[in-house]
Image (cartoon, rainbow, N blue to C red):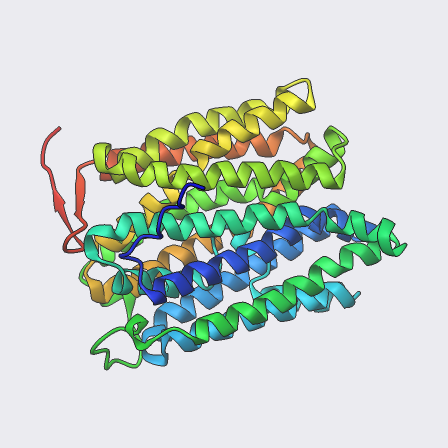
Length: 419
């Protein structure tokens, strides 16, 4: 039998723990986001109420990310990383058992529920700020690619696992709602496991020489760059929130009649394709640059997105969605490496926190806006709006930052003048 390639020798134990925790967390989120809208519909909640719960979850993630940026380094990154998934677990268990919209909304906010589906998990700032400390400087982009791959592989396997309730219905003679409830119980338990994995991190993930009780982002040397990038990322996230996975799943379910097992397979395959693309993005960025990789992969992906609701058959929509999945997330590792490399090491937590806050705030209102537009206009409107806004973001990002050349070796930018 051929020997499997050895894992990268440059990946440290702490980095592997972060990758594993990210994968487990995204596995749990991948299960939930496929079935969420369908499950809440069975329980009598409207599509608008589902959008509201997602909005509250993203808003809660923004608050937690802001707190992580202010006091995370002084409090301890490991402590914050353990706390956040425990809060998320509480939201998942509430969805399994609670019937009150007010209670579900409060716990969705407290736990940042659903935020990982938009790449805005409250754990992200601490994870992203920690990774450069536990990776070789020249391998930062590849490290963020592996980090992203772990997340998307977890999401894809979670999407596939969302079909398990169908087996439970037949094997254990459960009703549909009870079978789906098992997904949310599993979600809560898996996030407890994530908290345990974070607790095993070493002190290397902690910032060295931090004596301040909190960080004031308005006094940072790179504050102008940080807030400019954060504003752009908020626009991108706002657009992405029009089509979080639970809403796309609901679209395939209502517009094309794709059953639950089929939905799980669609998102499993699309997330596997996305995971492969992240490593391609890391290699491509060495040739054409981080910003060029981000923009030139994103624009065709968004043109494909705009076309999807106008395709006449389910198989065509699935095919284009899958092709779009290869390009749509190539900006993820490049974006994360770029943001960590254009500020000084002591500013990384602030940069990661503020960009994550901006993304969470940007995405917070869009599920509610999308479901409202869907209800009063057409199911195609969120697809078209998402694609157009993202293309505007791509062109603006390229115009503003195409001359900035991060230095992976030192984590600081150089700027090439002229064209």
